[in-house]
Length: 402
Image (cartoon, rainbow, N blue to C red; front, side, top):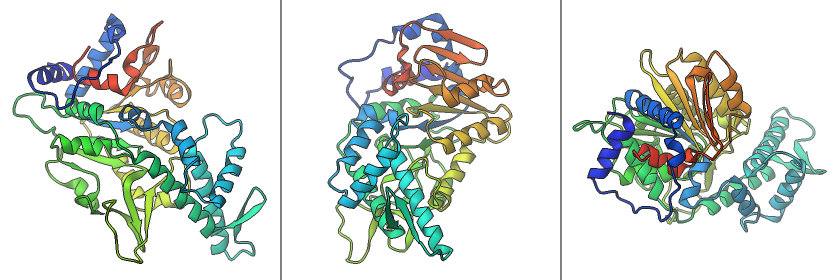
């Protein structure tokens, strides 16, 4: 019995914790034999192998969180930004004129790189220890103040009430036992998250699944890498770019989770500890980001003889350092890592096209695109949209619906 069928039986026999959506997409296009076969093969892969998921911003839209374009607009309009920060962002926006889909993370990365320039000049004892932007000189401290303001503005935009319906169903589908008596997989499911929100962690907790996210404690907690090695875990949550509820406290670079209504003693400064996706700034080489990157690399490199399926949802392959890690893992896996990609693009484009056309690894990559299925030399195209590109519908498929 396959992964999807097992979950279909489980969900039919047990009460779902969330209500059915009022309007669902028609999955009929996926019943065309070629596409049904592609899903059957995925069913077998997920049943027989260890599982990992790389989840991007597209998977949070259904919960009521903004996609990057909307996040950028709302962040730029935030009242948390000072006049200086707004001026800096205005110049950076102009520098990105004509760029393809530049967003607030790109702007933040640009600003962080300027911080690095100013700090490097200071470390070397240069006469000028400032970075110039739009004809104005800024100190590293002034630029870092703007970075902190932007991070706080981002958190303000995404720290809003959200719907847990789809994420609860997704976690329920992935973690239902494959047969009676088997409640936990041999290896925990790895969730590599590019988002700052806490939807996956919340869904795991609501489903009473034991997971590690690097935090030891409760609503207020401290960073403890050893939590990822605990026995009996159902999942490991690896937040590669930080989290909405992580804070950096004075003199303590490792994150804390601090309950947001908690008033700390005077003098204890808190800064939001999230980091933009594409920055090359040295912070990404420090802990906890270096530790998280190491965990992600390990998750993508299964032990010899242990096949792993990495399923990618809601990610548009816009982060070069993430892409490099994926490609290296594929090439070093000796065929033991399979990449499954659900994408809104009609067919493989950009980095994904490059992987698909590389004969050395193309058989390890299965692409469920909006207008077709692509796997090595096997290509099936569709005249109509295939709704498997939406996270809501991926969840339905994982739950056994066809």
